[in-house]
Length: 222
Image 1: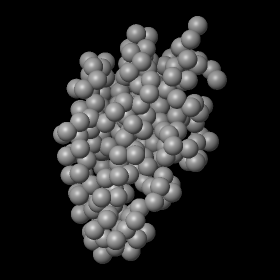
Image 2: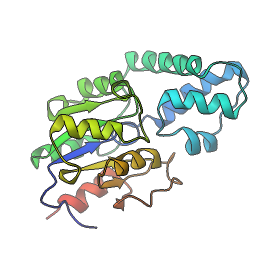
Image 3: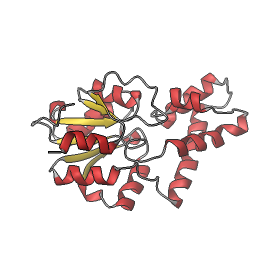
């Protein structure tokens, strides 16, 4: 596992499942969204089909797979409302090692971006709650692009806004959908799977780590 090569100037972090421990909460909120339609959402379905995928596409997938007559956009709207209600009360908790990782990247002089298939409001709540807002120079969220992950648009936009080539940055992701987006944008990408994405195909990652702390130890230790 090689350390950061000299040209790397920036780290582009995914948000949900990478910096914040939100997937279990998203699962519960989707259960609440689908319960009125008689859908019993399972861990297996969520992990395989929904984890790491934008809410709008989640709506399309569940409406199709469970033969629902409701419009996918209505499902997505309900889930978004429930998520915003949750975030209004409290931000999503950080993943273990996330604050130390952000601190270390900042101390190493690396530029930092957050590139997410989730909402800008969710990122905003994270930044205002955990003390590293001044270190994040670029945020690209689902509202900013026509095609979110697994399309590369969000990462391409971040690179453009930061004035960087793909060879000057690297991505950190937790799902195969996010990994696909980063790789399609030409970025080297490490994967740190969660319990929800442990069975995802992460073969295109430059390396797979068990935690953010393991990644930072491998990359930055002397």
